[in-house]
Image (cartoon, rainbow, N blue to C red; front, side):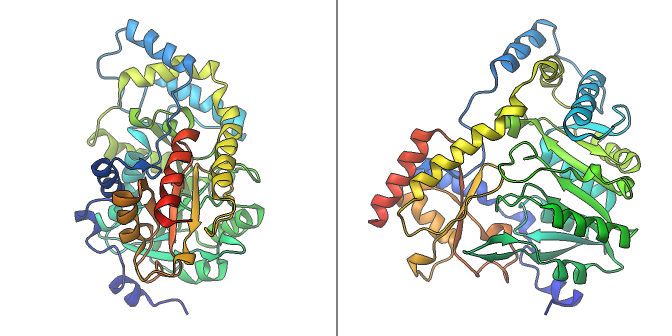
Length: 398
């Protein structure tokens, strides 16, 4: 039975997490210390498209060194508006419904903190990307975590009865990551129907869509939360250029959707970063009309995923091919070890020559012991994936 609100607030596994080092920093530190192959953090090995690099050079020649408008270059916002019409069939006003941000993380932070207040409940689907809960806690709101169902036969899926039961009068915000990191799950037609029903039945509920992997879908069809008309003024979505164009370190993204929510976000954004890297904004403004990368990126990562799966074949490691993102989960129940996934990740990064991300930091403590799960990133070169897994198999003797 689902826990009461009092138990949820007392038993929340991330209390104080905002003062701790993230799992990414820890795993990267262990890998750097030992020289392990890092198949953990989700940054691609591939270079950005050549035309994008050309656009950076062109922007440099135009002397884009100074501040630009706080909410982003209007030319870039116009390009994003055109893409949304072409790719998703959604009309967005570039002046009022799109805000350029310093990557998706800043957009998520300002979207959450501009909407919820102390005492509000925020619904998260466990495992949840680890940047959500700390922001919710910072503003004094209450994260309510609903575990995704999991089995080795079916992978991850959503328990809609549990989700509906978790929504109460204090539930202000629902954060959904689709495609989902770290599980690789993509919402299907039945899921979209349930979401539509819940949003219509709860007029005080807002939805924040983390859609940074929108172009990395291998099975099914991606549908943005902005494609639902009846509750569009209660929806904001976040996108990132880094995931699609192999430039995560450039930290360029945007928030799009609700006019009213965008204005609240902008009031935070203006006094947070004021404006975002002018050179990168101009570069994408030049590049996007020529872009062919986003239409081909899913095929590229499908090949990458399948290569990683070929390295897992014939081994006792459990997995089901992910439907999207560039992450593959693996189940390590065969080890029969009384060890946490974080301890195992540390052991492997320091001693086995292979670093990966454990699942438990994405989950409430009471949910995280069901299976021993790790996340592998297949946005790495085939040589790196091959070397990392060979190191691990040699260490394990399999």
